[in-house]
Amino acid sequence: MDYTNEPHGVFFMIDNKSFYASVESVERGLNPLRSVLVVMSEADNTGSGLVLAASPQAKKRFGISNVSRQYEVPVTPALMVVPPRMNLYIEKNIAINQIFRSFVADEDCYPYSIDESILDMTHSWHLFGPTPLAVARTIQRTVRHKLGLYTTVGIGENPIQAKLALDLFAKHDHDLIGQLTYTTMATKVWPLTDLTKIWSIGRRTAIHLQHLGIHSMQDLALIDPYELQQAMGIIGTQLFALAWGIDRSQLHEVVTPQDKSWGNSQVLPRDYLKQGEIELVLREIATQVTARMRRHYQKAGCVSLGIGFAHAAAQTDGRSGFSHSLRIEPTASSYELINHLLTLFRGAWAGQAIRHIAVSVSHLVPDTGLQLNLFQDPERQLKNMRFERVLDQVRRRFGTTALFPASSLLPGGTMLARAGLVGGHNGGNSYD
Amino acid sequence: MIETPQQAAKLIQQRLAIYFKPQARHRYQIEIVNNIYGPTYNFFLNSQAPHQRERSLPLHRLQVYQLDYLEAVIVLLRSTTQLTFNFVDFATLRWPQKQTLIQ
Image 1 (tube, rainbow over the protein chains, first blue to last red):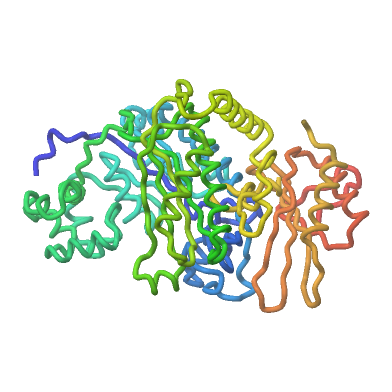
Image 2: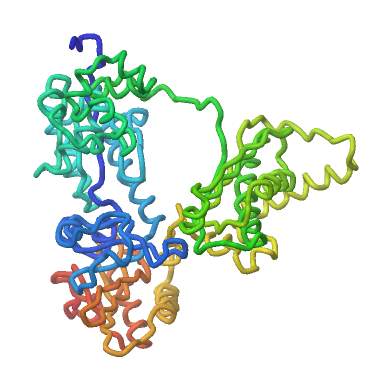
């Protein structure tokens, strides 16, 4: 393969080792690599409890993985269980990215997730050391020194190589650093046979590839790309490029989605069977989603509803749930959007027990003014709009629970319980 | 707004009242960590039942990183609870008032 015309930069993909567990260890004066600690969410909808993060030692000694259930975690005095504090983790993530920004220009630091960032070091690495490897060590030491956290660094000539180096090699390396280049892809990555270990290849894609006779990264790299494209479409060509370590993405070019949408979903704390209770949660989620949309001065031309059945109901029904969308006259009114969602729900629901509800609004247009309806009282329409604006303003200023419908106090309502959560887990505000 | 030692102690007491539900054969202690990376003084309620997992609930993080401030908070807390205080990572530091080792 001729790589001459491919981008040759220096990219670092930096990940925090067991981030939540490490932050909690440091807060308790423990070494993140030696502590035996799990962060367990005991929010209502996690059942008995869900492990959000386990320290490296907890993983090693007890085989605990993230997303283990409470009952899967061994009962032993050697293990410390702590509740999550999502706001604290966000605070630490900001602090880490601030450190990264002392090594790269602001526009070359791309936070990728709560514990991962991509640094384009192409133009700045030589200011901090003789080799990219030495610079990676300096960054690791700085983060450790200032925040007490251990970081894992993947180094590559483009972002995908850095990500593969991080996932495949750095996490198992003594120095927590992995390196990949165009020339080492064949020797380091091609021998891998567990395709699900590779970024962007999930279980289903791996099965699909195996049906095509691809059982290793070498098979993937050496297949006819046109054949792969025929079988898998554009994803096939992307996977082929991945096997050769090719990534032509320009991180500084902002990708604007063709159709942005607003949405939210909830896993319910128990099986919901009563129509009144399900519709109550549906209203609560829709109210929250539409308020976010109005905050961006937008109207929605499409509403979508996704319902997930409870395990037993899914077995009986044969489907895991249903999802439906409806194109509508663009509106910003919660009342109207909720009515459309209720119509969708009532039309498709046949009494199954429900465990998951997702609501989204899309086909957004700027909310430049109210389109009056000829068949309704104009004063009433204006009043409704002003009413919703006032509600939005009060909630923005005093919090989402400052004003809420009395129905949220009925059995089944989840809004009040979830108001203090961040990303569905304990924000930890009450501990600060 | 900077929190006074009285406010900090009151907040910790309130949280203790919520989380501390004494049960037989359980060991409880308040852990105070000198977190040099914050820098903060962190308070936790740790509980341990025989052969069970240890649980550690955060109570508060003191943002004022001064020993005399911490000493004032501890004095107020000691007057309202009999729980054991466990100090972590204070090494050879001494209380500014009493001049005894922090332990």
